[in-house]
Image (cartoon, rainbow, N blue to C red):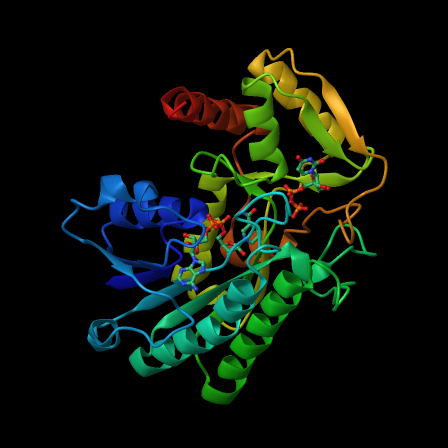
Length: 326
Ligand code: NAD
Ligand code: UDP
């Protein structure tokens, strides 16, 4: 069985590639290293069943790839960080983000149809926008600002979902959509800018931990190993065919609590600093997945406690920062 992972050199994608190889699959990873790094998959390069191809999913795909026999396709290729201060943020890569989720999704759906491969589109909890329904079930249509600073991502993902549904309805493609909620773990980029990465880096380097808004907004964070188990179940089991499924951890706390947990777990003396009283534009006030559907269809729920996941993530960043060129 051969599996294509688009965006496989990114944070989540590299864990997914590693796990699929461990399960015995052949894995082709495609990535243009826009926000991911070759270093994320460097340990896999020597594996006889792993192939890395540098290509952009929004441009014509290499012939060699089109000729390969593919059984499954994961589409994870897209910037994902909303922090405008990060060079990796979709806000600083708006056209690339829109292309990867529109043109890129179209190319990969076409490829899936040609190979009769099963397909998974990695969507996001951002399709719910600043949700007015809490927690968010898949049946909620969302509350998204279509012209705001987050819309290049939110609307591109919503377009990717619509396109995937067209292939399901019109061509009977065996496809599914997974809405990923906040995920954290080793291999997040130091410059990623998302809350968990930012707070850990700030705590470990004795800089103030920067809270946007007053820190009363909530999130729920899923450890990457749990998410990868969910992604694999979602593509490799038939029960998810034609479905939209939330994947995330329903344990919810405020951003201020997150900062306190990270400060405590790192033993840092960094002050917790309210950067601005107002939340950034269109920043959701609350977010928590309803995962009833994932439980029912996939028999999946997260297993890793936040304290354990945090420990592993902090260990990763500690080592990374120690080896950073000064
Ligand atoms: P990431 O930036 O680490 O990974 C994305 C990968 O896609 C990178 O390696 C990047 O180089 C690659 N990529 C981007 N555009 C590409 C293109 N045009 N062609 C080929 N490769 C391209 O981000 P991540 O956190 O690992 O997210 C992976 C996927 O999961 C994304 O689709 C993201 O929208 C989705 N997601 C992630 C989270 C999260 O909390 N991490 C939450 C919701 C959704
Ligand atoms: N956040 C923060 N300080 C930071 C980074 C993020 O207060 O240095 C906040 C951000 O405004 C949001 C929450 O933490 O309310 C989660 O942000 P993240 O970037 O992780 O992803 P999001 O859930 O917004 O997609």
